[in-house]
Length: 419
Ligand SMILES: Nc1ncnc2c1ncn2[C@@H]1O[C@H](COP(=O)(O)OP(=O)(O)OP(=O)(O)O)[C@@H](O)[C@H]1O
Ligand SMILES: [Mg+2]
Image (tube, rainbow, N blue to C red; front, top):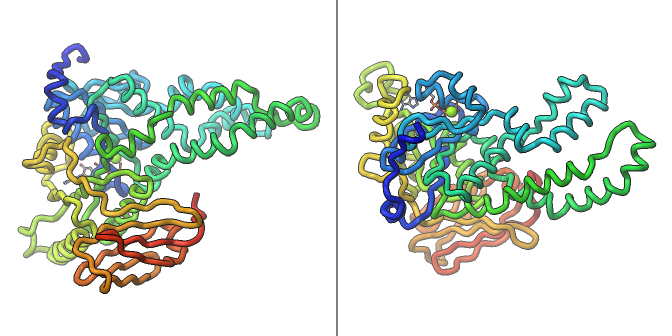
């Protein structure tokens, strides 16, 4: 089907993409909120507008193939490579075994040997040598490669539930840290200690091919953090449901993505019950949902909130997904960046953190800050903002708040311990 691609003239399309070479969209949120459905739906819209689009799944419980009503064997045959599902549209679900073969050879080999020498049987050692993070790094490698090779105009990421996708976006920073602080040291130590260690212990130290493999992996990842934190290229759409706990998790995700400097350009509240059900059994649900939606609006404002009702049927197959996209975006162009202004910025400073909030119409005299457990409540006259602090930050003291134009800068003292 690849040959049937009817890509429109790219230059003509570029202007529509707001002058941007490519677009990366993340759909993130708690388990079951609708990430896969909305990623697939958005992929369809992008492809139908003529963009070469790939929807990549970061969820180990892959369901992209099911949602497109494809036979799983079609994907299995493709060994984790992109599979065409419509003109311009591909889906890709990673196959970790295949990734190990192509990206992780020497690293995996060492880990498997290491685990095997510690007494584990060979098969179990091979299983365990699949480290947490390998799949995510493989996905980052794809994103980087697709961007560099201009293989697609649009990359859509169907994220794993929140916790795992947070780990995913922290990988470039963590790796950078590892390469800077530990890698060279480990390599040197291994080089000198290897002859002695092999005589004294049964445990093998990694050979230089292991370090070379890490270095090469790191090289291939270079630049991916710049792609993910460039708001003209990458934005995150947080998917949520109108339920207290789900919205709370969305607020936390919002802070984390912001912490990693990723731009959130929409909050999607999915599965809202239609008010026509009000007379029925669902009336309490509907009232509860109304309140949660109102709270979400207050919390996330001014980021656009897109909403979708609970539909009559389960969503699978091209037509239903397309209908879902129409309901979601209505008059909007799905690839536009819906929100430009970061509402706050969280950055590391010497000895602590600095949270900068944009406060419209602020006047120095009426700024009031209150901490209620992990929430910071910032009141400026009639304007109130609840900020759910990332866990590590919640334990720190907010030491000072300073208003600078319409920017409120809150300094936190201490170091986070969650990294
Ligand atoms: N607006 C909606 N109306 C009706 N059903 C919906 C709606 N949105 C999603 N669903 C259904 O909810 C289920 C979960 O959706 P989906 O798989 O997209 O969520 P997810 O966030 O990807 O879940 P997971 O975290 O398990 O990967 C699916 O069966 C889907 O058809
Ligand atoms: Mg899913």
